[in-house]
Amino acid sequence: MYTEIGSPPCRAVAITANLLGIKFNLKHIDLMKGEHLAPSFIKINPQHSLPAIDDNGFALSESRAIMCYLVNKYGKDDSMYPKDPQKRAVVDKMLNFDIGTFYARFADYYYVPFFSDEDFSPAKFKKIEDAFTILNAFLANSEYAAGNSFTIADITLAVTTTCYEADNFDISKYANVAKWLAKVKASPEFKKGDVDNHHEMFKKWLADMLNTKRNK
Image (cartoon, rainbow, N blue to C red; front, side, top):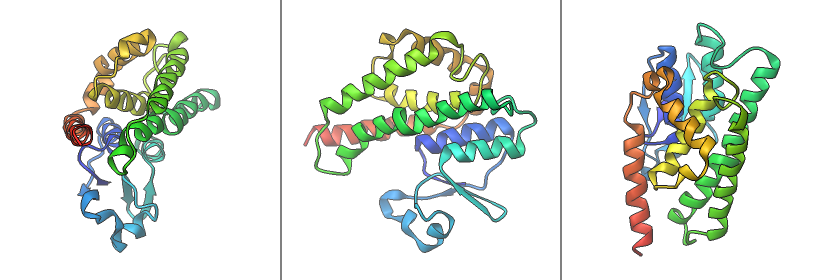
């Protein structure tokens, strides 16, 4: 897997792989040094984003697509990504909510100021609060993100939620989210998969980045 230490999407794929017993050959790509723009990596992923995998010649990028692929190919059962059309549709909905809204709003609020002259936007923060309100509603009648059992939707959404936690976002205001996150973190599945220290590295990176930006 082509990865960057601390990357939340890379962490989600790593958790999935750990749960499936997959041992990746890790190739660390330093974004700050522009290694993602090397011709050899662009052959793997023309979008030059991380993570990406090369499974015996099959190249794939986008963390959520990789997670689906890994479970489809290497899972002993379909519990993390059900084959039942309706159950799978709910998982897909939550995966798309994460990439299109929940993680996207995190990135828009936190990453954009770091890589540009733009300041932190109160309007963008309001969109984050709106995203939490939506997630809180999704979780009103289910134990997990896509029903009453643990799936890959819980992995990617929990990883994103801990990104917000890394900057001390007050999740307690959203009772269903707080209850769900505690349940996921305590679940044997998540604890078994989350054995790498990606989150602590990300937390340190975010703190350093925010201190740099806010002290300018």
